[in-house]
Image (cartoon, rainbow, N blue to C red; front, side, top):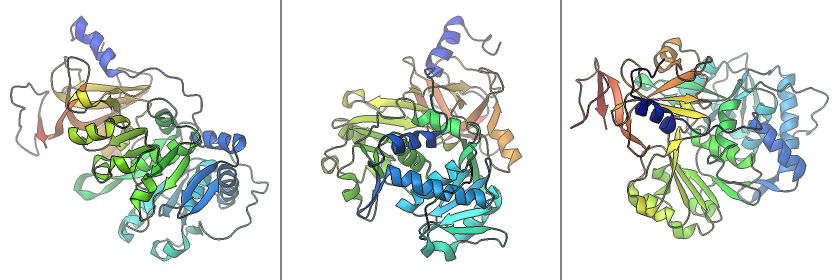
Length: 431
């Protein structure tokens, strides 16, 4: 038994602190949730950008037609399609079309990504089709056997008789390229199950509903953009796509999902309608969390893209002091393990591993890195995997997960122990 070495109390707390609620996810394919809103509320506005609007009915119809074209081009479930674009309404159509065709979209911000990285993404993801906007088409380093489709080309939006084969919930939905060792970017495969579990359960759904406005602040290649875009559309709200004026985009927002760095540049007084704020990424300074939590429900979230953006979420209040990292999200687990991958007693410092439905399907084309960062989950069993976050942490007595920097192998640096603390093995802390 993996917990036999722990005391009965620590065995109990291992599951009490480290396991999120078991919650059913009624729709494992997130684009199906978008389609339902198109049927029920076809005239509701799905997105706004630079004064242009797109209704749910139009979004579904245009995406269905483009999905049919992708299928005619040979795209099948399990394939990957490049989405090399900027924030825009046509980009949303392209994203939904790829999902309708059963494939995974591979987002890159075409305006900011160097051509060499685009070429790396095309090779690694083995795309055969790339979607982009006409003005950016010359920037795409397209191989001879690839097809480029302009998202903003006029087209007869008739899906035709082409059948669309539904993907399996464990098929890839999105491939995010994240920084790795030596500056190389690695493609993380997020499945439909991963994303539906984040967006269609609470608190990850943030109670978003028709009539709400969610701002897309970030570029499409960001892991948070998955949450912004699909989290909005899956719940029938309006996505306010940011242009050059960030203040104008946030002025009417009811939900903000962003990083502490971006949030620090916004004035709460300039967002009078906001009711929910979530920050992900670097730790959030307490004064920033206090300022926003006086006006809205404020969620402090932590986690890597490899665990579908977040592993823990906690609601912050101004009297709480330092923003807590919260508890594991629904259907997910968090473990603090020693160097031998055995659970540590509550209060001891070790490496943080993530398990459950949020664990992604691994890196594309990198077996060595997959072997280093993913492992069979001995606690959940049943063929499940867990992910090594490379964060150091410990459970506090009240069940919070305290993050204590990054862990690197001792062969890379001398071991540094936290003052007054026991570490879990040959790791060092980096701040």
